[in-house]
Amino acid sequence: MMNDQNHIGSQCPNCALVPFCSKSELETIRVNQRQLKRHEVLHRPNNQFSHLYAIQEGALKTHVTESSGKEIIHGLYLKNEVYGCDAIYNGRHSYYVTALSDTVICEIFYPKFLKLLQSEPNLLVGMLELMSCQLAGGVYRQFGLAEQRLCAFLLDLSSRLRVEQQAFLLPMTYLDIGHYLGLTAETVSRLFSRLKQEGMIAIQNRQIRFLWLEKLKELAGD
Amino acid sequence: MMNDQNHIGSQCPNCALVPFCSKSELETIRVNQRQLKRHEVLHRPNNQFSHLYAIQEGALKTHVTESSGKEIIHGLYLKNEVYGCDAIYNGRHSYYVTALSDTVICEIFYPKFLKLLQSEPNLLVGMLELMSCQLAGGVYRQFGLAEQRLCAFLLDLSSRLRVEQQAFLLPMTYLDIGHYLGLTAETVSRLFSRLKQEGMIAIQNRQIRFLWLEKLKELAGD
DNA sequence: CGGCGGCTTGAAAGGCATCAACATAAGTGG
DNA sequence: CCACTTATGTTGATGCCTTTCAAGCCGCCG
Image 1: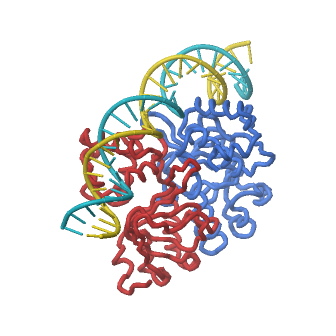
Image 2: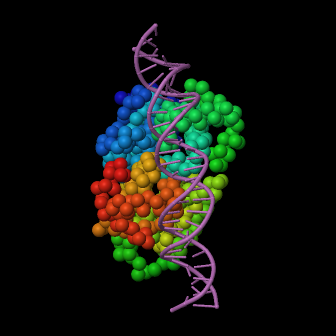
Image 3: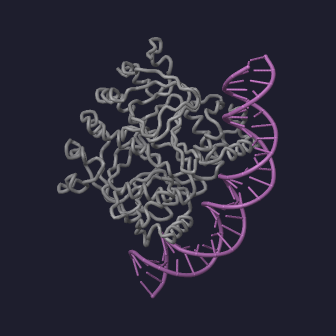
């Protein structure tokens, strides 16, 4: 339900859509703000697509489950990012969409958003850039050794979360990290232990800090 | 250079953009048709982004080279698909873009295309769907055993190439397939041998035929 | 306090990479 | 058109990395 006090730009100053929100009619179509609890499912495969979701707080994953029962995470959407673009093309969600932690999302009704795209060139450019960015990213996920993938993932995370002081809270469990990188939770744990032991990071209860950024980048393959 | 005889819709009837080409001004901004030889490089990292490319014939890959010297293929763009969307967001290409075989592309000057998007709602919808589709695909690439990834890749290929008679020509070498799936060429070769031996496919000189589609889908994990 | 999800660490097995040698196909220049 | 060269594909032996299975610990929350 609409919350009059929640003016866009004040609550979510870093949202990918905020440059357009405050200067356009986008604000008028933002009908709903929703809370999701950790592990709450926002969509299931074949659910009808109707909204884009700007993530104000928390994070979402898109995932499926293999026949073997193993979960595969296809996409990861962090605070200030927008989820939903992958469901535009066929009007349905292809994946489960689940909150990784307690999450606040801003629902954008797509049909109205699409109309707005046609009348606001700046918003259109922003939308295309947003999708383009999602297309371009994530090379690191499938290649190289496990350590390389994990280091690249950490650097990607810190960049996307606009981390300061080289420290931040991991937004997901080791199991989820594993499912995102194609590893097991055990391997992720072992890798973190190694990185810690070699003095490259400090980590405790998902609170992580980079101690040796150069080496980290080197391991990630630049 | 412009070829007057080459009316869109006659030469490339299945192009993702053809529904808009013939019915819009898109045709007017299609300034150039280009031939690329196998292995020819269309773009390098940091090249300025200026055009989208509709692939009329052949295929493109986007790739980078790790510090170890190993190539990583990030994207694969087949006949009738459109490459370039991943470079919109920062005005630069992030990857090498290379022709996998002799390729014919249709250059679309992006600034003009963007203007057209604003005036033609149908084209806009098409463009968003096109990018959405690219975002949603490719889950199979990073997970499961090598055999599973390869089977899923073959099914994806046959679907995207609109294959008939369950037979088609592989548009790339085993090495490229490996780089796309995170495997070595040797492993790809061994897997093909196994699939052949088990009567699931026939393959010779990259000419491939599905002999047991159900089993193939089963191995791919549905 | 107890229970459960998440993390840690060890031992063993297995899948894929690596290295090597060779076979076949494709491309080049005479 | 053939001889040569290079690129691509095949197959085997070995080793390493990651998975799997197992057991235990920790921290959070009811």
